[in-house]
Image (cartoon, rainbow, N blue to C red):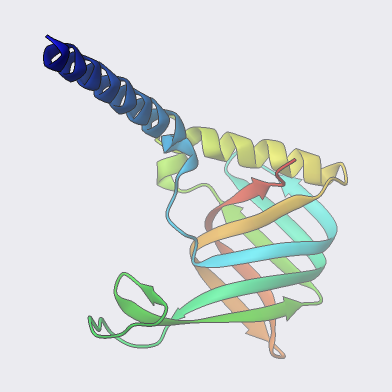
Length: 164
């Protein structure tokens, strides 16, 4: 009899854990996104322009971390990789730059990341009001470098709020 009760309790406990994991995954899904290719930390912001599908930020100072692919797929490589390809990560400063964040197809109305874009718009309004933000996360952006500094970055991405 004790074995049956023990087995029953184990099954009930396992079901509860499985349900908790499923709930966690469902709730966290909108917050999870692939690692960005380019992250921009805004230090001094001059101007923020907000449109429905584009956020433009003009800065007088920013730091950018860019992921660059340095070789083709190499399963034997043990360093930093992106989809199995060795990468180099570099940091570049900007003394005057324009960052244009475009809403990607996945963030369009009805898309799986629609809420993330709405959060970006809210964060952009907070940035206009002088509040700090965490960073811009770009995915496959176009980057213009002039004088060894970033002049502009344009691409799909999100404005990440500062965690309080």
